[in-house]
Image 1 (cartoon, rainbow, N blue to C red):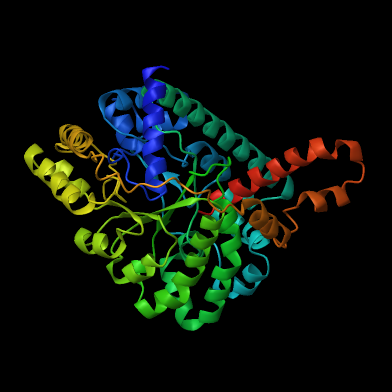
Image 2 (image 1 turned 180 degrees about the vertical axis):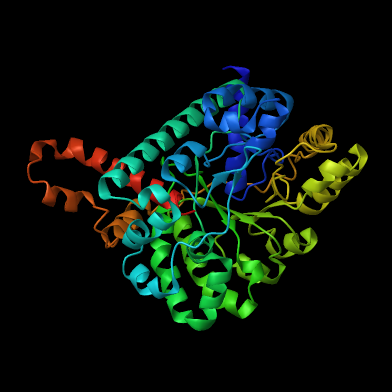
Length: 457
């Protein structure tokens, strides 16, 4: 067994222990770099790399060689090629090459009923043409634009996947499959109604907002499905709007659909990883109610209080202030890492991560990041005594097939077909080929579904 394979197995086992509530051999360490920062570190042009991801292999190789991390650094799903082909308004490339998200509004308040009746159809017919100019055209041009964009997206994903495979093989990263989705209320706010629009809606048409969040929840559960079956797959959900809401509004509009989403993903055997953006300290009791071993990366807050309230049930990370890496001395940065390890590491349920990821290399971040990651690697180890309480993991409940089949059957869309609906429509397909054709038809239906929802989140 090569050193890289052995290291990958060791790291994968650390995450498996963590996700099952056991104490790992040491604290897993995450990278602090976005792809933008990685490209800057490699001395290359951000815009050029985003447009030609085949050149990104050298970027990943240099960062993986120079910085310690147990998980693959960087990564993105914001490739300019397909956004450009579609005439994107939600994501555009800035002059530095960074992909930026202007405030957009793809849906009017008078369209809630249409959205609630069939979210997927409303997205395709009404919302996408407002967000993407090339889809606001005649049917033939629209079809060609979507086909070209989907092809571009597929190629970018394949290139990135190829690079990730090479880096895992060379540097022994953990092999944990992953995906991402969005909380229902945040999904409605981000691209459809905007921050200001939905903030007015919850005053003027509150019931419609609740119904819309309920209507989109199954679609966002399906979007969070792990592409390959695994007991240790992770689906990331970044949380946006809740800190800006009154607690009573949070409990009425934001929490119920989100709770259902996380509960259902857990029933699908998925480890849900929340990026708890901004200040969620008011909502710790709510977060406690989520399924056991939900991963929560905090941006702000009191780590002692979070450890006390959530640390025995959930997996905590974050809190390390990225800005300190930019502005602090090496000693200050290591002292902060030690402080957080002293608070959050005892008893396990902890992985080391930063409060946010770096987009630039200003100040002392390069040397400080190396020092902090090395410190946690060397000092974040658990003794045999601390791991003595570990238990043999029990098989997790996994209702993925049942849940997804129910969601698909109730999609209520003229643009999405289950296999049963498809074969009823296409009687020319010989029955003896059904077993061969069905997986392909379902796969490409899901590929387009995921691409469409990606364009809205």
